[in-house]
Image (cartoon, rainbow, N blue to C red):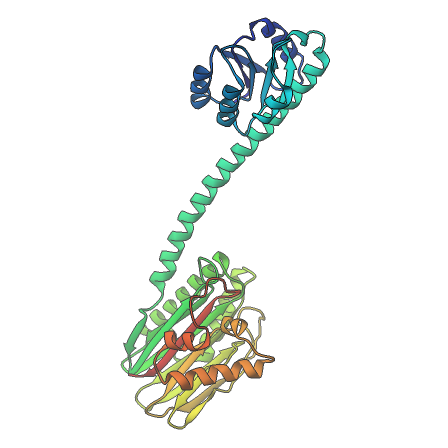
Length: 389
């Protein structure tokens, strides 16, 4: 808690000026002032190291030189120091200011220059108060930032725990992914869910925006799909066996949260028993790339974003997959980092990178598209590959 009074530290031979200083302080329209004294530089520095002082008033003498003033000003920085010069001494006002003094008066003239001294004292005490407030706000801000960092670290740990392993082999598929958040937390999310011995659900979702608010929606998304999986196991709901039904459930529940967030998503259901893929699209772009011995091309499909409209339109498609298939999913953050005159050129770069890497995985694909470390990205970047195990 900040003090309710301000402290003035008087140093060395200013005893004759104490009455004038205290009298002036009593008439200054500022919080109450407490006056304390020190009779040499070392004692003053000790006081400044242990106690908060608003203003230092130092009187130059044989015991207190300009070199001492410089040390005191450095110790008291950024708050002000006033210097009182002895009348007729060999002290230079400009030299005192250069050593750190905020203002300079002649001690013997304080009574005659009472009005000017009072004005200066008021300004310096006000300046000190503003500095103390700023320091207090800074301490509070640093404390809040520290608490925020702890919260974000906890949130990151939660989000990391929700993600699947970097490599997952289940239900006849081999899934790998790479996530590069633009901020500390990511709005991109991937998952691979075993439904039974043959069926595996996978998706890549991109929540609008980025950062903590978008990361919160990924927690909700994970919770929704977990609930749908539990419903399947107890035979209370079979929505998760249909990508389009899953999209409608996510859309309804996301609207009910009233978070003002929506997401784009590609969700696929691979059936190892007949090598088929059923998939649905919720406003996702770019579409996944399918690569096999039969060629490399974008999957077809369309659908509205999830969580924007109460009655969205989605479509579900089913295709047969070759024995050597690989499906590569991207979030749209990758497109923002690619150069190209138009979207067609950028999409062609995705195709070229998939062909060039030949199933080497998301890390190699990323290097082919964006070599080196990505330190600043305008949006989260996610790449996931799904291939036959």
